[in-house]
Length: 220
Ligand code: E4P
Image (cartoon, rainbow, N blue to C red; front, side, top):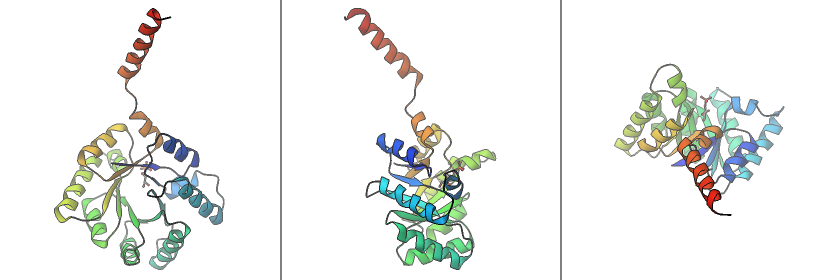
């Protein structure tokens, strides 16, 4: 399973990279707004720096701001020209689906974001999107079962051999990642703290303390 990091922060990306756990990056307009970037030129340079931080086979999802079809096309084409690692992130709207078909014909990779239902995931796959991003945590937040959506999308895509990859998004805790791995998604995108949480177990810490204490009590 691929581990993508859900951030626009270069330091976090470098930390994930140093852990050897980085297969890609996803950004969104809210994440970009947290960085100290004040104009479009700075934002574009920032996207390029993120891409340059990654290995060749990794990719970076960058979201369009426009909602109008022609503007989405213009913006997406511009983003895709910034760097070959950029995957254009398009919201699940009617214009978004049309834009995905356009980019698919031009062989520009896309990620359909804000997926909350199997119907949306089915339509996005039929439009030829490269990745779908179902938002697990935001469904859980409203008492729906986010992981069940992932299960259903996986089974539908398997039924028809859709090439679209499932990139489980809005990951909030380690169990989301474990369950996604059991379901067999292509990738998850997660904040770095959730990836670090996967490493933790209290028995590991207790066990390690005891090993070192036992050793030091006998061996000088
Ligand atoms: C990534 O593609 C999504 O934009 C992101 O995972 C959303 O996460 P959130 O629901 O925690 O904001």
